[in-house]
Image (tube, rainbow, N blue to C red; front, side, top):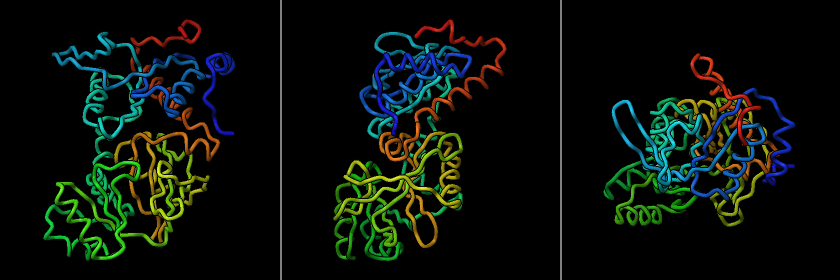
Length: 335
């Protein structure tokens, strides 16, 4: 059975049953909505392992920059020093501001599940593809240009129609169009250019048949994987667009590709989306704030716990390197 969002009473019982760490880590989940499944699961997992965990809306944080005295305020209060670690859940619409807040935590030597720079790399789809291409990882053939006069050659570059057109700023399948003919592709591309949008043009992988693979990576290890299948009449397999998910066992090449992609982008926690193809797994996207609901329900695995365990290891390593830093024992910590 997949992990459930449980009551505070049940969580407290779990706390006393699982005394498997010797210290309390103060964790902040940076999220705009404490009711989201992923946010609640992370809080639950942290508390169940004996840590303090709070949800902080990064949109309501603001920074102070001063020589040797960086500060961070939230709802009028200075929270510098309040947290040992953060888990960024930054939405694409607030990437710039959200990563600025993550960066301020980094300046204050707070552990983060994902570095701000790595989040920025993953959010810029073009930059992400360029980095992964340079690392020799499998990708769909992709074209990028700015002028409508280049449309003919762009279409030729990716192997002709059918092809996929993507907005650089799109998420969850929004702004992704399948153009089945050259004429349709030209019309859509020119329309996007006319609106001033930046787009990617990609080859269409027929053999994928409306499916893709999401590998969830935590600290250099694949901790869960699912196959997502698009609903009938749809080519996008995103769960937000009605796709379905089932557990899958990755082959060696798929595992290696997912781990290498996360490492190259500098992400500790991410979802790597891949298309199965005749030439091996092809990376579609790397998500630095992957949702937990679909993968936990499909696999039955406690993915949230894996993320918390990573923060525990980082906290322990940091404490060992800093003799002046005293560990807070669980017996003395407040719930």
